[in-house]
Structures are given as structure tokens and as C-alpha cells.
Amino acid sequence: MDTMDAIMTRRSIRKFEERQIPDEILNRIILAGTYAPSALALQPWAFVVIQDKEFLKEISDYCAPVLLSNMRKSVSHEGMSDKFRKLLEGENYSIYYNAPTVILIAGKNTCRFKDIDCSLCAENMMLAAHALGVGSCFVGSSEIAYENKELLEKFRIPEGSSPVGTIAFGYPLEKPKAGEKLTPKVVRI
Ligand SMILES: Cc1cc2nc3c(=O)[nH]c(=O)nc-3n(C[C@H](O)[C@H](O)[C@H](O)COP(=O)(O)O)c2cc1C
Image 1: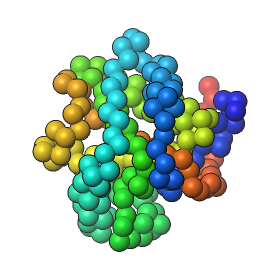
Image 2: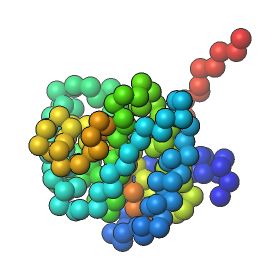
Image 3: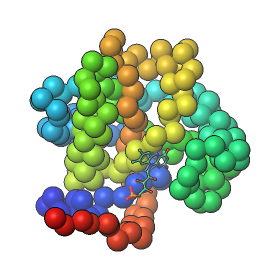
Image 4: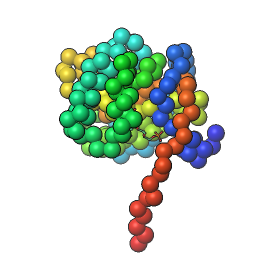
């Protein structure tokens, strides 16, 4: 798959097969992340690979009701669609969509551009995954879990780093179409 194809056909996947992704493939996905550009080439990322189903359920069970309550209170849900709210209201909703692997990307606190660096790393990982036949979904909703000190500790994030985001990975069971793309505002000087 060439780069342009990968960019144009990657979609967020929210239905996954149960089968686990082989370590060899996951390592290639992480390696692709580390080839992302980073300010001063500091590469401030670290990865927590989570495959423990009970822990993933614990995070999800903690975050989902808070997310829903925030949505109902109209707190910080700008742009969140009714579709997402309905998903959340579903009985067995998992913020990770029962993906067999979730990777948390953490950024080194001392790096000024850690959030940008780690986001570039995340996109590299999602594109690489797609090229390798693995689906992914960036899940920002886990940020609720980081506010809970006890839960945050369980992520075993390396000392001196903080979570930037989580990505759910698994073999896709759906092939969603791209949503409508807004015409970009482009200023030419
Ligand atoms: C910062 C960020 C946070 C996101 N958080 C979630 C999330 O919590 N749950 C979810 O299902 N999708 C989440 N997404 C995925 C977006 O919903 C998705 O990228 C968007 O709808 C566009 O669809 P596409 O990825 O298929 O192009 C997030 C994406 C980004 C970039």
C-alpha cells in the first residue's frame, strides 16, 4: 500500500476480531511510531502495551459513565455526535471497543513539544497498522482515567512521563466509509 492510499483509506475502527495481534506486528507498528519527526529529535515517547482484558475493562467501566454524564451535562462535548452518545448508552459499551490491544503513548514531561511529537508518533502508528491490515482507533476518552491516581498508577507509565493518548488496535470487523470532509480554509500568501 503506498503512502497516499494508506492516508486516504485509514478509518477509525470500532469493531474488532477477538484474535490478538502477533508481537512481531505490534513491534513494527511501534517502530513506525518512532520514525515520526520530533522536536530536536528528542523522541520523547514511551509506550505501554495493554492486553490485560480485566484492566481494559476496569478503565472503560470507570470512564464510560463519566463520559456519558459529561455529555448529558453538555460539558466539553463540542462536536460529539448523537451517534457517539448512543454508543455510550449501550449496555456493553467499551471505550476501547473490546480491542485486544491498547497502546498508551506517554510523553516526557521535560520536552516542550511532547504532545505534538507523540501525536505525530500516534498517526505514524495508525497508518502503519492500516498498511499491515490492523485497524485502530485513537481513544481520547481515557483521559478521564488519568484523573484517578490509583488507576493512573496501574498504567505503569515510566517515571517523568505523562499520558498523551491511547490507541485501540485489532483486526477490523468493519470497513467504515470516510465522513464528509470540510473544505479546508487555505490562505495563500
Ligand atoms: C484526539 C482524538 C480523540 C479521539 N477520541 C475518540 C474516542 O474517545 N472514541 C472514539 O470512538 N473515537 C475517538 N477518536 C476518533 C475520531 O472520532 C475519528 O478520528 C474521527 O471521527 C474521524 O474518523 P476517521 O478516523 O475514521 O477518519 C478520537 C480522535 C482523536 C484525534
